[in-house]
Length: 260
Length: 255
Image (cartoon, rainbow over all chains, first blue to last red):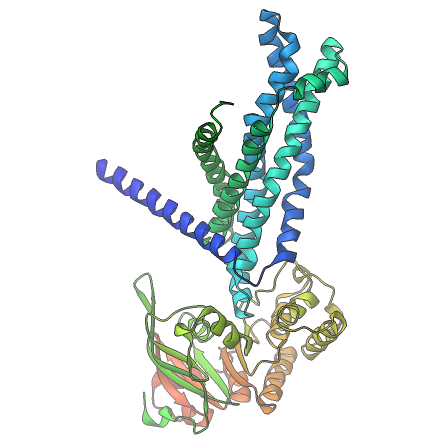
């Protein structure tokens, strides 16, 4: 029993070590020429632009739901006027970044894992190496960089859409004007609320790109393996994001103690 | 291995394998393989499935690293090269994978153009022109704009060969070039490889197809259980007293 647990823990640590080395290699390779700007930009488009519908719809829906919950709670204290402010702070500081991270992990992580996994089992990665292309840089570094670039942008959009969704809910419930709603929403939001929370999603992007690229590069056992990689990319990226978020939030509170 | 089959070429060596040994999961796939391929010659590696032929090719282009031994390409130890040096060596080689391994997200033409886009500063028009010419060489002139999924297995193989030839490499490594092709197309591919050899390209072919090997190869070698059991011209191997070599040479098995 304990022996099996020990083996499991060792395997987990070995996996984390391998992924960390993969990520460290990607960081190192990213600063070395030649730079794959064109390929990176293509992936920013694929990852960022194509995620927009999902992000916008989810943001608006979350804003509506959060607004309803916030109203139900604050009404008891007669503090309905605080709804836009509470909603904006909640979205910008935590809900927006985390939801964006999990949504992108689902959509993009699965895509990267499956695409690279399929390329691995059909020898396309070897074929890239054979034509003297650094497959790691061309396939993994570019995708990781694109995730890092796209995540903060998508987070800003989900934040705004969430606040807008809150407005729609408030307007339909209390008839609050747009001017008053947005004035209250942004009245106490500061730089230290927005920037650290948004920039931490670059780390989420790094996690999504690294975990799913690693799993894709190490795919074995044909199409069955590709399916497993796709699922694992989503699950492991999401778990890593949730765990790393705890550390990042603590760090943000340490660096910005007043706002905490 | 009989002495008659140990004939070594007299020309400069394009490729040399020295005591190459490789295992996967405790299964020894290559066991002390020593071979050399003369510059400008065609070398055919024969053997049953799973005897390590493709693994040998992947060592030559540096996709696999030897457990023991060395692989030299034009005198350079492939496993000891830096990333940049390995890239240079790879640019001088073309590789046709057994599965063709076409990039499935781009068209057939762009597959062939891909190495040219990456390694030359030619204008787009010239790159397309060369890619079309390479596709025409393998009988796919009309298929530039098709996606790999639209091609049959044999056509994919030919497109893979066109991509391998894109940079006009000095060394061409070809894994089962005629497998899955009809006899007429297979003959055309064989002839294409012979023509490339006449132009000075060093060719290493892995094949089961004995008629094809006889047509293309200046030198043939038989790999069995990870070891080279015979090496020589087709005529020399025909006279071999080794049962496995004789069985193989007289099987005339098609790819």
